[in-house]
Length: 353
Image (cartoon, rainbow, N blue to C red; front, side, top):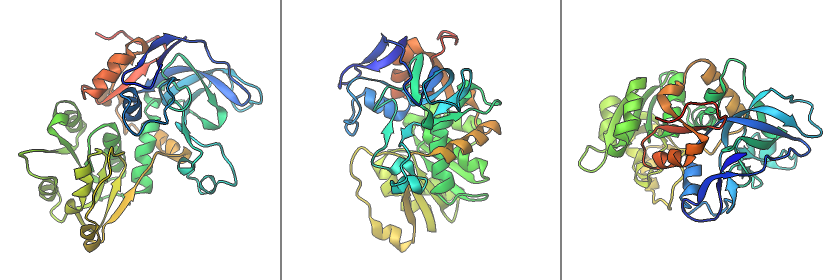
């Protein structure tokens, strides 16, 4: 089978390769992959960035996948050939002795792993997945659309569980990448008022897409008004909540300027270096500073509901690449030429123009 696979721990050391079709072991299911998204973590691993040293030197990338069951291993009774599924990306085998499993937060366990970084993932024609980490796709959700379930679950965890966002909440989302965009859509789905903020580099693709969807946007950067001025134009008393999804240290450090007293700032991005925060400013406004990390099964189920309700327009956000053009999808993602790149691994999609 074909797989987009890294072969050594160095920059851009991945290519499409012919590898054996995996055989499902006990408790595992073999999926024929339909679609698999290129995540920011895949991009960081492809570029061999600092902080991704735990990624295997040889591994097939991909954890945002949807597919069809084609074979089941021993001990499987809940899955049959032909069933459609998505995979939970950040995986922790359930253990009643693990306090984070008991609390419903398996993504915080020290035993967690990411399939596609720490074992072979879904940028391939087939992938084996432990049945514990599979979720059935509702019949009214297409497999291409279902490939957005994992990143949407991250947004759902952030907005639904970590940010106090409900109907009427005035929300700023800093960073219009796919996680920021999905956070904005999740907040909008709950009835919040949303301002989506990016830089001039985001203008051509990301902010333009946001405006087409119907979001108000603001652009920040050198020679432009600071974020706080843009926010106060839209929300004169300040935002109730700010979601920091850009990964820019300055955006998080200055977030207190845009939020009203007793508001909330939630960081959902990963940062490449330590950040210096003036906590006194947060304290004087009694701003809750929170983080949101990954997601768990209930967040995937909430993501399904958003997808079923038409809250996410696949065509407005996604460019689909055939698996053979995976390297082009990575390059376009790095250069911000697309909002979201998704690989068609089925071999049935159209060729790129």
